[in-house]
Amino acid sequence: PVQSPCSGGRCASIMASAGGLPEPAAAAASPSAASRSVAALVRESLQDRWRQENAHQAVLDRLADLIILHLDAIGGACEVGSAAESGHEEACANCLKLARNLSAGRPSVQEHWRRRGIIEKLAPRLRSDLARPQEERSVPWRDAVVTFCAQVVAGHPEMRVHVLLALFPYGLAAVFALCWHKPHRAFVLAQNLFAHDASSGDEVPEGTRRLLETLEGHCVLLLLLSLLRGDSAAEDSPHDAETREWATIFFYGLWLRGGFEAVYRGTRRLTARRVQAFFCQAAMPAGVAPEAAAIALSRLAPRLCCQADAVGLLWHTVHSMLGGLPVAGDASETSEGRRLAVGLLGDAGFARLLAEEMAEACTDVAAAWGLEWKCQAPSKEALAAIDAESDQVSADALAACAAEDRLGGPQFANADEMLLGGDGADDEGSQSIWGKGDAGPFAELMQVALELSAVRQDKSGRFPLHLAGAIMTSNIALIDALHRFRFGDVSKMAPKRETDPEAVLAAQSCQLVDQVRLCGNLLFGLPAVQDFARFTIGLRVLLSHCYADNELPMLREVGVFSIRNATLGNLANQEVVRELLADRRDADQRSQRAQQGEQLLPPAPSIQEFGFGV
Image 1 (cartoon, rainbow, N blue to C red):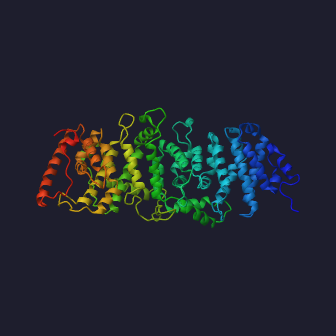
Image 2 (image 1 turned 90 degrees about the horizontal axis):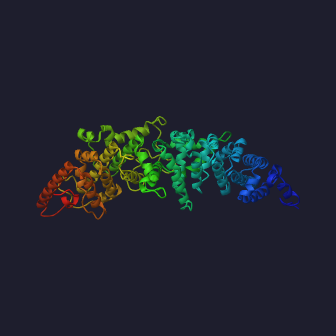
Image 3 (image 1 turned 120 degrees about the horizontal axis):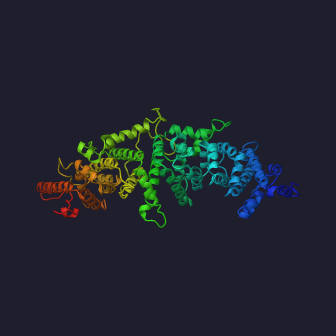
C-alpha cells in the first residue's frame, strides 16, 4: 500500500527541527506535508510572543533554506503545472508568509533576508512568471510575495535601498503585476519602497529619482496607474476603496516633492514600442526563451491603460488630493490639500505644464468639434498687466510647445515611434487624447485648474499671474468659439433663429459652465488679471454668458459671478462693462426691429446685478 505523507515517523521527522520547521530533505520529498506544517506556524506567528521566541538564527536560517529550496524546485526540475510544482509553490508561499510575520518590527530579521539573498532569488522567478504559459500562479503565492516584499522594507531605509537595487525596474514591475486581484497591495509596497525619509531632508532619494525621471520608472508608473484604474475585464473589486486610499498616500508623497511634472511629461512621451520593449525585457531574465515575451504581452497588454486614461488618472490624483486630506483639528486653510496646492503653484515647472496642457486641450477639443478657433495673441498692454512674455500666454505657442516636448523628447527621438494609445499598447497615431471633452482627461484637467484657482491668495500661496493669463487666454478662446457655434457671429450677422442640438452638446462636453467658473475664480482678488481681461476679449466674452439656459444649469449664475469678480474694485473694468451693456441693448433693439419684435439672443443682464451701481 502507498504510505501517506504523514504516516509512520515522517510527520515527526518533518516537525523535529528548528522552531518546528521541517528539515529541507523532508520538505523536498514531501512539499505538501511541509506546507501544512509551515502553515500551522504561520498561524502561531500571529502572536507576538511566538515571534519573540523564534526570531533567532537557527529558525531564520532554516526558513531561508526552505524558501530557496522551494524556489529552486519551482523553476527547476518540476514540470510546469504539475502537482509537484503546485506543492512547492504552496510551501514556498507559506514560508514567505512566515518570514513576513517574523520581520514585523524587527530590523535584524529584515536584514537576515538580505544576507541570504532572498530578494535576489525571487526576482528572476517573478520575471519568468510574467511569461508563464499556464494561468497565473495561485492567489496565496501572489499575496505572499507582495506582502513579504512590503514587510521586509517597512521602516528600514537600508533595506529599502537594497530591495530597490535588486528589483528596479523589471523585478519591481513583475511584483506589481501580481496585484491585479488586490491592487492596494501594490501601492502599499510602493509606499514602503519610495516613502520619504525625513533624515534625507529635501533631497530626493536615488530610487525615487529613477522612478520619476527615467523611461523605466515611467513604465513602472504606467503599470501602477493601470492597477489604480482596475482590471477592465473584472467587476468592481471590494478592495477599490483601499486601492484609492493607498494610491492617494503614495502619489501625494511624490507630488509634494515636485515629481508631477517629470512623471506627467514622461507618461505623455511613452510610445507603444517603448512600453512593449520594457515588458518584453521584464519577462526575459537570463535563460528565458525570447518567445516568452509574446506570452507576457498577451497577458499584460489588455490590462494596461491607454495614454488618455493614464493622463486622466494623473490629473485625477491631483484633483482628489486638492479637495481633501484635512488635518484633524485644523482649519481647511491648513489642510494637506492646501499644502499641495501651494507647492504646485510655487513650482515653475508645474505651472508651465498646466499652461501648456490647458492650451493644447482647448485647441484640440475645439478642433474635434469643428469650432472656428480665433485665439489672438495678447496685446502688449495685456502682457504688461501680468508681467509676462507672449510665449508664456499665447495658446497657440503653448500648445505647440506641448507637442514638441512629446515628439522631441531626448528619450523618444525616433519619429516613427507612435505615442501610446488605445487599450494596452495599441497605437492611435496622432489622435488627441482630449477627444471632444466629456469625461476623462479634459474633465480632470479642468477640475485641477478649478481647485487651484480657488486657493486663498496670500503670502503662502499665490496664483502665478502668467499662468492665470495663459489659462484665461485658452479658455476664453474656447468659450468664444462655443458661443459662435451656438448663436453665430453676432458682430457680422443676425443670431441663429434655432439652436443646433450639436452646439448644445458641444457646450456641455466642453464643460462650458466650468470654463466660465474658472475664469471667474482667476479674476477674484487679482487686479492684474482683471486688467488682462480688459485688454483682451475676456470681459466681452464673459458678459455674453450671463444668461439663463435650461440646457446649461448655473451658466447665468457663474457668468454674473465672473463679471462681478472682474469689476470688483476696478473702475476701468466697470466702465467697459457699462459700455458693452449699452452696445448690447442697442444691438438687441436693432435686431428686434429687423425680426419683427422677435428676441433671438438671450436678454442681457442689468447693471445692478454686478454690484457697482448704475
